[in-house]
Length: 329
Image (cartoon, rainbow, N blue to C red; front, side, top):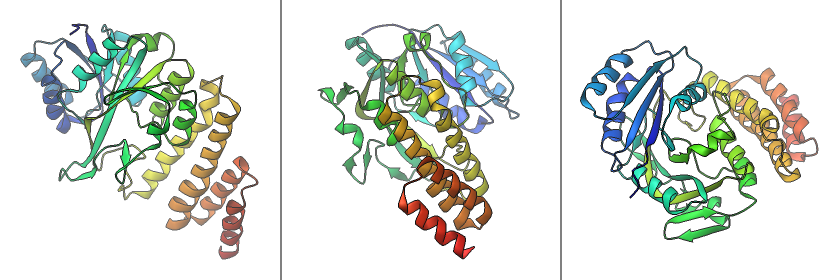
C-alpha cells in the first residue's frame, strides 16, 4: 500500500458543534498518512479553540487558516493552494467519513493510473435522529441511478467511466458525485480550479473535469454519511421550511448554470441544449411554480415563468401553465 500524502481540505463556517465528530472521523481513517488543512471562512463561534485542542492531540500536521467569509468554494481553493499532498480530499464539516473512505480511494487511484478522481456513495441521514432517508445516493427507490447506464470498465464494485456522454449526464441528472465523497489527484488542479460560486460549484467542477479529459471512477459502496439538518445550504435540503432561503439558494444555482458556458468552452450542441433545458426547468418549475407561485409570490412567479420560456420557447407545457397563471392572477 502506498504511503503518499493525502491533503484533507476542510472548509468550515460556524460549525464548531460539528467539528469534534469531524475530527474523530478523520482520526479513525484506516489510511493514516494525511495532513489536515482547516479553512475557517469567517466563523464567529469557538471554532479556533476546538481546532487548537485537536492540534494538541494529533500527530498529523494541521494547518489552520482564517479568512473573511467568502463561501465554501473560495475556502476550498485557499486550502488547495497550501496543500502538499499528492492526493486532495474534501471534508464537509457536518458530514462523516466512514473509516475506509481514504484507504479504498487511494488504493483505487494507485491501482488505476488512468483514474484521476474516485468517489463513493453517500448515505443521507437526518442529523438529529440518525434516520436514514436515502440508503445510497447511487440508488433511488432501490433502483440504480442513470449513472449505471454509462459505459464503464467494471471490476467488482469499481466502475471506471469510459463514456463521452458522462458530461451530458452530469448536466441533465448528475453522476452522483460530490467533493465530500471524493479523492482527487492533485494534477487536476494544475489544469482547472473550483469555480467560486456559493452554490452549484461542485456540479460545475465535475463537468469541467470530464470535459477536460480526466477519468472519473465511482465505487459502489457507502463512503460518507451526509447529514441533513437546518444549517444545510445545499439545494438538496428539501425539508428546509424557510422559503426565502430556498429561493435564494435556487437563484444561486441558476446563476451557476447560466455561467457554465463561460467555464467550459468545448461544450457540444447536446450539452449546450441540456443547459438551456435545465435553466428552463429551474426557472419555470422549481423557482417559478414550486417556490414562488405556490407560496404566494405571484408577480415574481410570472417573471420566472417568462425566464423559463425564454430558454425553451416552444415547450407547450410552459405556455399552458403560464397562460392559466395569468388568468388566475
